[in-house]
Amino acid sequence: MNRIIPAVLACCVPILLSTGANASEEQFLGGLEGQYAGQGQVRLRTNKEPINVDCTFTSTTSGNSLSLKGRCRGLLVVSRAVGVDLKISGGAYRGSYIGAGSGPASLSGKRRGDTLNLAIGWAKEVNGDRRASLSVAKAGNDGLTLTTTDRDPASGKTVTTSRITLQRQ
Image (cartoon, rainbow, N blue to C red; front, side, top):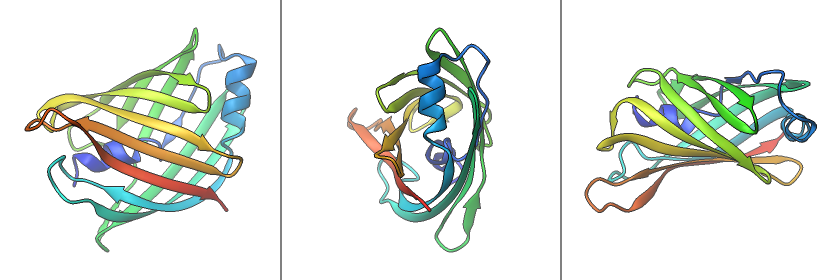
């Protein structure tokens, strides 16, 4: 569980953006502010059955910065808090994820519409390689959907390893 929970929870964490963000990015980030709660599913491995998780988050913004902190719980005994630091430069997000059982992971990507798409580069192999993807999608005015995907080493197919749907409280 220590390996996949980081990818699932990558958006449950502090995100710090540089002062170079433009007005469009500031508007997008500002729209994410609030208290969130929701549920979803997490796969420990691409070939395992998903487990249900309950999550809570607090998101605060200030200009071109966003702090998103949270915790997800599953199997009645597993709970994990995580952290992400991102900076935006020229429309590209770059940063790191800390809290994974595999060590610090790199993050990079861009926003397209209401979705922030990030490539995850794990410090150690997870599901046969060191790559995965994370998307943080704004769902209307009051929702967020956090989705991680990874390649199944046996089939080569892309598998959704986590999907968490949140609603502003």
